[in-house]
Length: 215
Picture 1 (cartoon, one colour):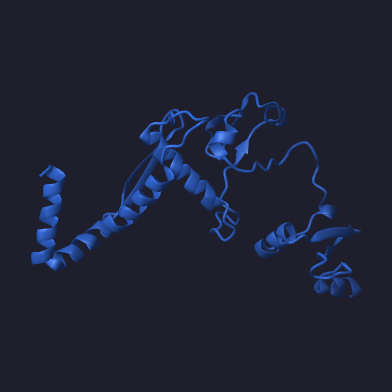
Picture 2: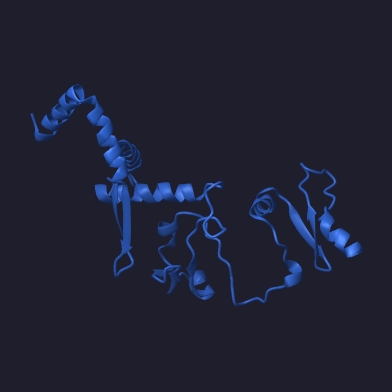
């Protein structure tokens, strides 16, 4: 037998003569779980993790399924096995970050924030920086993010307080994803529902605001 085959036979024998030991091993593995990450001088993230056997098997099966070689224009996948595993992890994380009910971080959806000059973003030249202060080129964004970019221009237009409305997280998503519209009259917002809510799309006002105005 190979060393690995011999090890598997030993585990089976041990599990037969000491079934409680299997449970103790599982609990020891859970207690040892850890995740360490740190950036090097180039900004690359180094990850070192210890996962218990059961969840480790789940992660291994998941990443191996996502990291299968893919042909590119009929040619063999140029990536190494390690690169395919890294890409599989990034793809899985990027997909998870797009889930609507993902726990918020600092009151907002988990996201990557990159700051750069508007001209550099438009011309894909120059560089910006992440929220950690690491520089990032404008050119590799499609690879690094693999998602929709939502630029927010700052420092070029003044904030108009009469064109703003304060919403909780739930209603923020309702407005953006439910086809609701907001109109302002003298700085007071009215909410226009989509036709599937109100065929006439009659504007709706906040009752508490109207009561305060009447008082």
